[in-house]
Length: 503
Image (cartoon, rainbow, N blue to C red):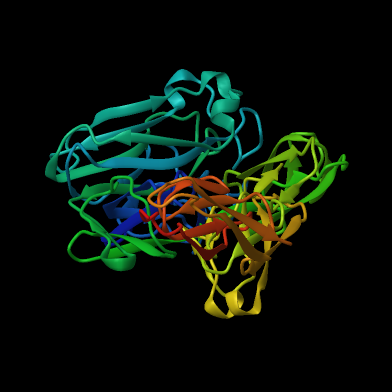
């Protein structure tokens, strides 16, 4: 009996996308890392695709062997049905396709099995060298046939033949009317030399167009875009078409949030007398939970340590690089102190204060208090303080020097009191008069009663001693400056006797 079937060719396009060689719907990357998209696929024209699961020979065939579809000896390689060449005919036995238009880029693939030699029919297998199956082609309507491949039985017990194996071959010649057949030219009789076939596929590649689209306007025309660094999460899709059929595959790129780490307190200082301090790490961003590794080997979030350098690695649930943080613990070998200098007393007529502050174990200081002005600034230890008029009138002001740059140690303070005063005490001048008319042997001495030494003197005749000498008749003024810089002035008159007259 001859079976004839109409062939129904169809196209199919397949495409598979990967990102960084990962074929998942979602691919995770680290922030700032590149993505390498790749795709594989193609479009094929399926001239034949038969798996015989419907219990028929399928499309595109003719056969003189009355094939069996009830799996009398074995199931197909996937456990489903197959086509079995049983005892219905002697030889030659053949499966012949209709003519196809093919090129040498087309392929024929199928699964085939021989029965084992000596098993009862319909499962008795070929064993003699001429009892195997030929795969052949013809371009003249079947008048002549040429082997593509022949499978000799090898005695009937070769496991490479008596178990299902897949075979593929390129079409050796192109043309518009090429037929193929599976052909067994010799058998030992109807009840001998049986075999099966399954999953017959004849395909020809088609011209395809491939392009990518994706988040934020991403596009590329071909299979494999260049590497790039995505800025945000998003879908990316590769498309393939032969002009009629289209297929796609998509990948979602998920970017792990960036991970950072901090250590608090930052660069702490061990105060004078302290031996250790606790520092604590924190992970920020990333994908919690976090794990911690200190250069001491500790894996806790907080550690206690003495002076030295400490580094930290923080890992999160992603496989991204750890965040790194570092800190240095320093130790003060001396105490932090502030010295505002000694208290000062200044004359209220010249009240500007020259400050002489100093600090130890700190990087600086700041002056506080008062309502006046610090020049050049209140962070200059040797600033000049210009008091307000209210402070001068009140007679006193207190300034406080506070240490700065103390690290994590408490600041120290020191105060200075500044008093504004007037000249203290009274001036008293005694004089020795000139004893001759026209003479210049007068003297004047100034004395300070209950004052603030040391004193300096300036007379209006430029003498600078407490006593002015060699004075002639006239008025003499002295200005006295006391130890506070205050001044007071007093005057004295030097007289001379009348001139002598002749009798």
